[in-house]
Image (cartoon, rainbow, N blue to C red; front, top):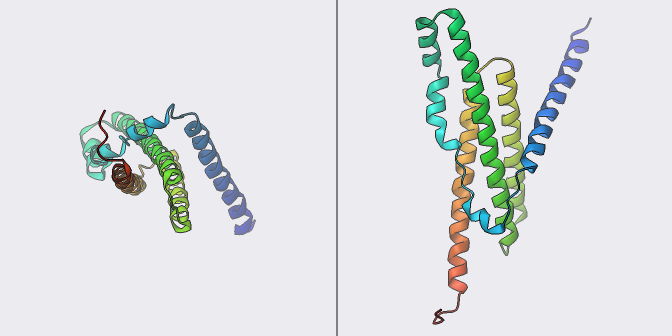
Length: 185
């Protein structure tokens, strides 16, 4: 049996797995709908802020400490629980990103000028996030703790949150500048 006969089905299975992960994530994200446009101002990503605690819990040093101090059976249980924590954090990062994406699309719709470059950047960011997200899930499925992917995803969500805050501040400043002066209620 040639190596190509092994690699092609393996690549197809991996690709199918990625598609399933991305598709199931999109379906769950679609169920979370903002009820009122005014609620968009209240979208605040919350999960990414807990990365320092997650990083500590998933660190190699912590893992080694547990291996030294606990019996093997309990150490395995702790490792399983840490993977569950990583899965929950990964889902939370995805929720943060989807919320910020919705906010970004809304801001773009309200903005008088949206360049193709901005739209292309948003699309590239979305694709990169989804790819890293899928890689993180695959790592967890394989039994590893994907600290590098979690760190990159957290940084992406943090940068996007900062950009959205800056955009909201600019929109508010423009709205205040366009209000007529001298009218009181």
